[in-house]
Length: 512
Image (spheres, helix red, strand yellow):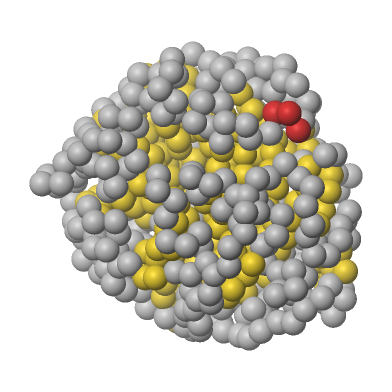
């Protein structure tokens, strides 16, 4: 499936050996990484459901060597292993890392993560860390790419359904993810979020604490190998609403998670901290994409700015918002948007960027065809919990799930993973929108450790086959023309791992 729209081209990632759609499966919740030494090499990880009648999923992935025009889907990390919550990252040398949630099937008796590494552009993966040595549900991780004492350290966060039994946790690896030190609790227990490292080696965690509560928490000593990480700054953040879980647009999942990223451009905006989330404003039943920034190391944050620029309509959704910071400091944001849908739920991927640290944002541009997000559900009624992107100096690489392919045996479209390149030159020229003045807040809190436990449930199942008929502007087997840039390389087959059933957090419970 190749789906062109208004100068942007989406290429299907979860394809068979001939580059065609695999009929009857489902792929969602995708995480992309790009080789910083060769932008043609990328990998995308996702939750792979071979049989949509089952809740059993594995750790799928695909790779490209030609900038996203052609993708290879070798299989799963480990066959017949229940896995979920995929997150990928790359270091400055071009190694890829894949953090994956693992559990037993059909009943989840634990929620632990393991880390995998690829040294050949995502073609093959080797497990770095021992099973059940780290992590938990809704985990995210980052790598210190600075030249300081923590260079190469890896940090992960997760919610309270974890390998250690309780507590919203933070863990550190000082040896590239081979071993993970004992977890410490994060103050105020922020969940469903992400983390990043500034140029001074400080680690910042952004997450949701329930209701309209969000936090930005800092550890300045996680970069010191001989010290137990602690948190010395803890700031309440106003994002103009609350995180929505579950939401009508994604019945058993999030309407979007919290994304935090740090500017490491080296210029005037260096070490700015940014947070973005699709939130539910007061008195509403649908979400907007909201953004805040801190220019003082997370002491204070600006008032929230709405990135989606359509006229107010309480029936329209702006969900799965995500963003990334380019090396030159430009901000790119994408999200699913139902503004053009008569039924208020069919969605398109939209794009906007900011060249002034998020003070103003370009006019929103649709970059994909419309799709029905409520078709193609596996046994679990959602299209994942997030989409992701990585920016370079001229644009952004996006991994998202959509339902362009039609499955005649089910009489509906199916969930698949797509790659699209977005850039300011590919859309309209920006005319910024306004924005913000900081509002200070709190200070930090402490550390802690855990001990294991967990449980949950699921239901297994099987496989799929190939060939489908798209219902969008599309065609089979990719052939170039797009804004991507890359070169090809293959990689072997892995073995899958499942996903878990999350456990309660503030208001909702985690999602698998």
